[in-house]
Image (cartoon, rainbow, N blue to C red; front, side):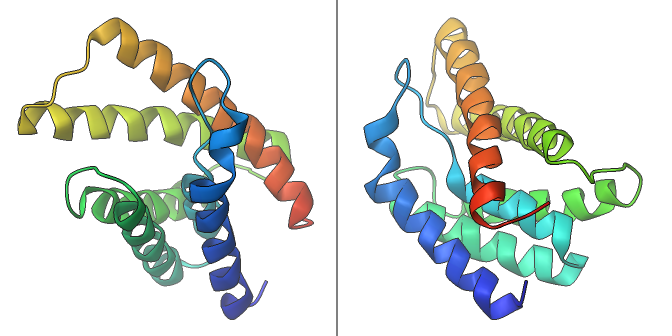
Length: 154
């Protein structure tokens, strides 16, 4: 996919994240479409473009959320870069394996955000965090299969 088209996909995913995804909550959780965009960039572009797309996705996520400033920008860029490195060593040709990778990245993303929140003095009880992190990550991995289908990624 051309980079300009993928940039449009990122903006569409961001708008869907803000405007539509909230209507599809399951047990109070929703998928992270922007994180799916970061991982897709890491899977299909070189590290420079994955880093750039990660910065854009994270910046959009920071704009649309009330999290600490620039936390998502930094973390998303890091995920984009790390997925490129991982994709060099692991066969990720099947959409199911890509969805599993997205699940794993979503779990680690939730852990990283919890660490940032903890250091900033924002505490979430561990039980609530674990339930939310697992269900969000599972929902994100499942939603990625729909995104792959919509983008005709095989």
